[in-house]
Image 1 (cartoon, rainbow, N blue to C red):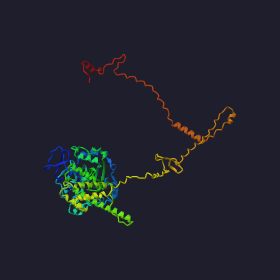
Image 2: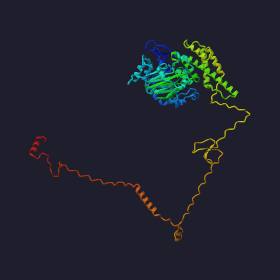
Image 3: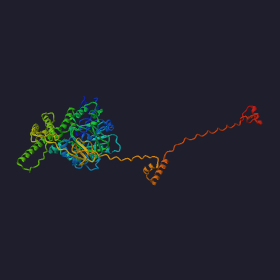
Image 4: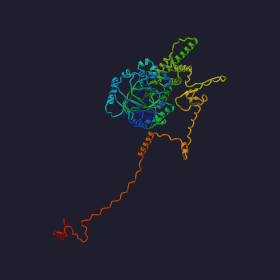
Length: 612
C-alpha cells in the first residue's frame, strides 16, 4: 500500500541508469530523458514503479499454467482465524504466507455485508480528495474526490480502467467499522511499542488501514512493501490474484537490478530469476484473508471489481533482518523519503526499547525459576515472557547494530524524527539513544542464542557402553502386499498374513501336488465271441442327452454359414433386327420423294423450291 503522504501531482524520472529522481516542471510536462517517467504513487507499498498492465495482463493469461501452486512455496491454507495463533507464529517465524478461509476466530471487525464503494464515500466524505491511478500506464489522475470515484465505479460503462490503492483511513470515520485481525495487533510494533500518548497527539506511522477499490483489469507489477513491512489483506468483495516470490538474497538482488534497469518496462521480473516456476500464483476470493510476510515480492491482478481492506505492520524481531535489507535497497536506489515507510527509524527504536523490556522480564523470570527451584516452592507466579527464538535472537542482534549506526549518524534522521529516539530511550529507562543501544547489547549478551529444535547433538562417554538398538518388530499384519520391506518377508505364517522378520518364521512348506488320476487301460478287440465277452459293456445311452446332442448338431448346422454359389452366367439376348427405314429402296421398286406424286409437288420440284 502507498500511504497518503504520496507524491500527489508530481512525477519523477529515472536518470543515469538507476533511480535518481528529479521533479518534472509543470503539469503534464514530458520527461527529457530517454527513460519513462516513474510515478511513485502507482507503487503498491512503494519501493519502485510498476509495469504496464496492457503488456503484462495478456502475458499472465498465456502463461497461467506455468506458475507453480502456492503450496510449492510454502503458502499455508488455514480453515479459521483460530489457526493463526502464537504457536503458528513461533513455528513459522512469520515468514510463511497464509490464506485464512474464514474470518471466524480472527478477531477482525468488518462492515455489514451490503457495504459498497458508494458507502465508503458516504462514511469518509464525498469531498475527500483521493488518488486515482490509470491502470493502463500507471499514471495519476488529478482532482478526483471520493464522490467522483463512487460515480465512476457505479457507472454502467467506463471509459478507462482505474484503480485506488492509496486511501489510508485510520483518521476517518471508517476506522470505527474496520479493525485489523487480533493476530496482527498483538505483534505490530505500532500497536505494542509506540507510546499511546504520541498516538493521542496524532504522531504515529499511519499505514495500518487502507481501502483498495479496483475495477476489473487492474494490475500492479512486482514490488516489495515499503520498509519490508508485512501485510494483512482481506478481500471484502471480488477477487485478487497474487504472484508471489520468496525474498531470498538472490531474488532481492535480482529485484534491485531490475528496478535499476532501463528495460524494466519490457522485462517480466520472474524471467530474471528462472521463469514462472520460481513464482507462485495464488487466488484470494471474497471472504478470505491473506497474510503476506515481510519483504515477499508480489504482483497483483484484479479479475473482477473488488473492494479490499488491509494494512501494513512491523511484525517484530523475527523479520527485522528482511526489513533492514529492504531499507538498504531503498537507500541504494535513492528512493525519496516521502515514499518510504513513515517514521521507520523511530519505530524500530521503540521496537528495540520493547525488546529490552522483554529481555529484562525474561531474565527476571529465569532468576525467579532458579529461586523457586532452590526453595522448593511450587506456588510461583507465571511470568508472561516467552523466551526468544533463534530467529528472534539473530534479528535482535541485527537491530542493535542498525540502531547503533543510526544513533551515531546525525544524517540518518531529520529534525522531525530525532526527538522520537530520545523518547524511545526514556521508555526503556535510558537517557539517550546511545545508552539504549548499549543496554540492549549488554542484555542480549546475557541471553545465549537458543538452539533450533530440529538440531540434536548426541554426546556419550567413550567408556560407556552404547545404547542397545531398539527392538525390531517381528510381525506386522497386512491385508495385502504393500511392497518390499528391507529385512521382512510377506507371507502367511503362524500369526496370519503379513510381514515377518527374516529368520523368525519358517516359510510355509510347498503344498504337495495332487495324486495323478489313474488312467483306464486301453481295451483291445479281436474278432471272435470270446474277446467280445471280455470287452466292457458300453454305457447306457441317456435318451435326453441323445436328444440334446441331436438338437445341438442341428442348430450348429443351421447356424453354420452356407457357401455361396457363383451366379450362373445368362446367355446374351439376341440383338433385335434393325427396323427398315421408310425411305429404303425395296428391291425392284423405285421410291419417289415425298411430295412429288402430286401435280403441285412436281411443279415445285421443277421450279427448285422447297416445300414447307
